Image 1 (cartoon, rainbow, N blue to C red):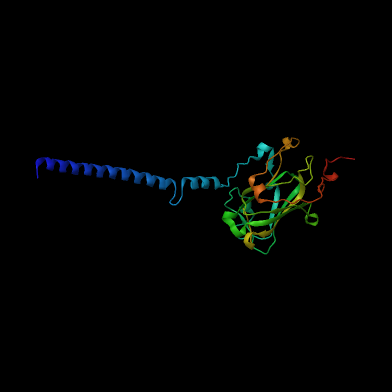
Image 2: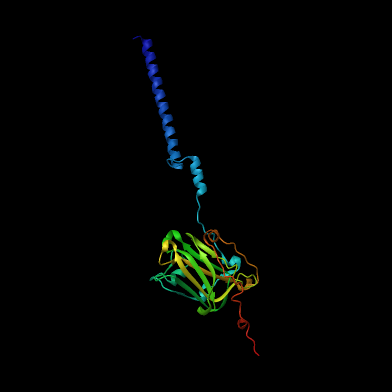
Length: 259
């Protein structure tokens, strides 16, 4: 073999080796990009599918609620709370705790009752309820009835609520109760929460929070409004009593006068 042929053969082998290394670099870079893409887009999904998935994600986020900004105050501490039954450690104290990881758990036959007794006539402008289907499943109420009156002898239902996998704080509408100048104020000595039915036909129930609000004294005559949360519009179908003028403040509750 001539020197010229040997040089040509060596040059050919060198070019092939360079091409091999270049191709290997290209292959490695492509593999790295493919791994990055797999980290961003899971195996078996495309960019379009991933974008569609992002649009379909729905997160349950509770908007922080500041009652003072609406001229409200929580008055649950003015009442005496009783329940029809409870598991040890899961009674009123757990229900009234600010931490929603705690809850009231009933321990008896349905329906379950939560009674809130006030020592004087109160004007309620908002009731909030915390339920969590993700944590409680069959313990989560699906039907709740709210009643109010001066005592057990004259309790009147004013709201019949239906829930479907509720999550978070829920504002209970009082638009049709008929009390106060705006017709949206509930006046009562006794408020009763009646749990009629649970999801998946569960026997006992969990309620993780219940708040009752009245207007601040200085804002009693001010006009206050609050928009219902997404939980209210999506998970509750309120049904109110037909009579809007019940539970009007009686004359004897006025200022004392000497005659």
